[in-house]
Length: 93
Length: 203
Image (cartoon, rainbow over the protein chains, first blue to last red):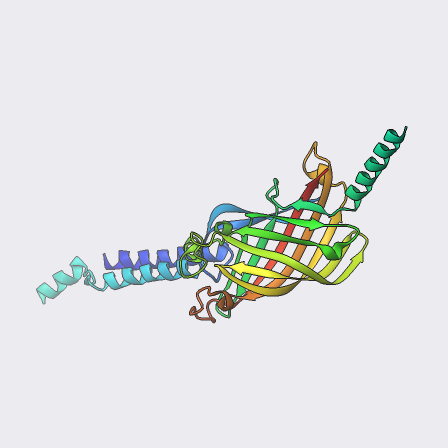
């Protein structure tokens, strides 16, 4: 169980960082919409509309790393599993 | 004969006065392109957003652009930032309090340093800027582009002119009581506003 939690923590941290990097490594807060610009050819004005879509920010990375840290912390409550062969060896000696 | 002559004179006088009269341009854009972009550039984070709830009327005389006057209104509730929590704060009591102060306005009173080249006029506009119920006199650079007869290209079946208005200016949020206690390393005190709007005057 200890090992499973540690691997899960590593996976959560790695996945969050990868998502953040591939989404543009946004250094501010996460966004739920992104601006889309379109040029009005008559007036030359660039209109702005917003498209729904999640862009992770540093708060997302922080939350994911906190979650990963919690998993590592939880893993400390489990003892390292010992193999049956070791136990048998101890019993015979 | 005399009656006909008088009628002709009246008509021609009306015609010439209509040509010389300033036109009222309505800035409620049916295409929804008009926008005001705002930016707060703090050391820790830059906040960018925009508003598209623009309306208002400007009277403009192509023969005398220096006499331009009018009022531009931005619906405070149309201010948008891409982070939902930030938007909630922006519209809330400490920041813009949009429920109580639904409009951000600029009322132009006077144009100075007017320079006209072709259809484009640049000037410094002085007027009253009002946010969150606080009104301040301010002067900002402005560029007006008069597009004669171009309304039909944007709105089919309508004849008329367009007036494009552009301006970039800076205001201090502390001057308008917009969360003056917010730390300036996180949220800049200076707000840069870029206005790009077009108004229409139908014939």
